[in-house]
Image (cartoon, rainbow, N blue to C red; front, top):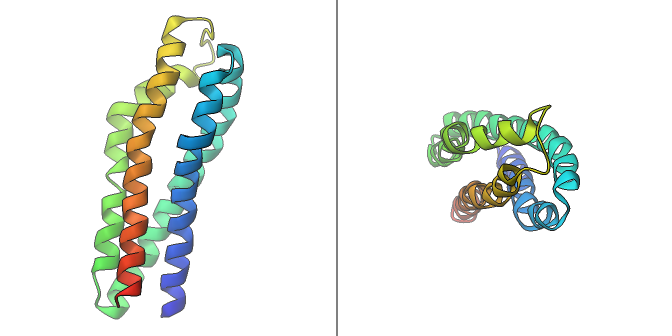
Length: 145
């Protein structure tokens, strides 16, 4: 059973790593690039990372559900449910912005693109913090079992 917890921690760590990298490495690069380059970087970056994060979050929650069921320790599954607050947050706050930046006809020279790129980092930092809190919480329950 301990192998399941290690896999959960590994996958959640990977998800937090993607979010953290997005916030502290990729976003600053995009902000300092020209708008055209920023869009050229953002589109493939977003396309790859949003899928990876979705798959990781589903895998983490399924494994946490299995572990919680087998062990009777429902903290594992409960904590991973907190991670899924990112879903509604993304749909309501980030998707309109993501859709504008990902649009085929996006004008990289528009003031809207500059605003959206700045705003994306602020909005994404909330996702990063939430993933970090979930990851740290899982480590704490693993250590204190």
